[in-house]
Image (cartoon, rainbow, N blue to C red; front, side):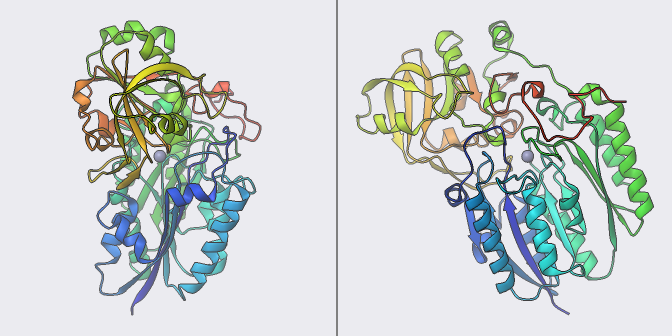
Length: 492
Ligand SMILES: [Zn+2]
């Protein structure tokens, strides 16, 4: 028998604390891929689709049917117009794909739309209803997923990446595809328990190669090694969504052993709830920075947690720009989203200087514009490629028209026309910038940039800057989250 297996995904991490919505054009600027385009984009990528394709394209009994994949850079809630279009496309393309024997689904797990606070639950439920209960559905998740009951129940099994920065996405795709194949061939009968916890892990403490995550993942590995267990997922959660499912969760999949799945998921949940106090973070503020930078080895990576583009922030926060321009720690590098200033530099020649007001233009949360006098070093198209395993697993990047300028304070600023995640050193190397030539490099992220930048930087400081991705959850106003939930309420 030949199994017709579909591949389908809507992938977005939505920050509900932002005023600007994520529109259809943002998906167009990201990825809107149909059929074979999905395979062409990701076949060799360190992305979960790469792993799915690797497994499914190599089986004599599988007909792989890539259907639809939509992805946009993390940002505000998906607008109702965009979510309507996404659902419409999904329905139409799934019908066009014809009868399927199994389906791989690839959400991020933290998508929120203006119409549906649990947008992933919405589209996954729709897919389940269109396919019926008897067709196996297996999915991958980003560990920054806020798991809802609806999402969990819409697939037969879920597997999340196990690293942050996410460098095991391809393997996760492979594992999920093999699990689906095992089901279709009648070799396994997965059953799953998904459990929400009373803990929201601070973004600052979500680095999987450091404590306290190490202890948690060690326990998850122990559980995963038990004979009846097929997969264990730790869902760290995404703090920047004011939704009922915000927080950390666990998923255990066993081979036809529901009581064991429930018992083991309970064990993981109780571990996290017992050690919750370890998961709340240090929160180093701007006043403490000069002394810490002085002591740090260079090049030093400064992580701008409040303007974490991978968490939806605008990428034009100026707190660290003002800091760099006012202090003297040697050459600094920083990338800032500012299409307006790029436009101003596009009207002058290389070598010309301009005094411009940079950043702080998207909203009032990320500092005011900083006046800077800078010389244009280069004007580039902003397109680059990454072929190494890096957070996010994307291959092609596009910053739009980009100005690389040198300030009178000897800092290099990369000014982009599109928001860009700092996940690849090619962002510098492709445009002739040597990351080793800087003493201080600012990256607008928390953990994701480490996979790229720690091959160059000798030290790092995570800075608790204000913004839509502040590391301090207690400064955000939630009205829909579950209760009790640490760190807002005391638990246990
Ligand atoms: Zn993530």
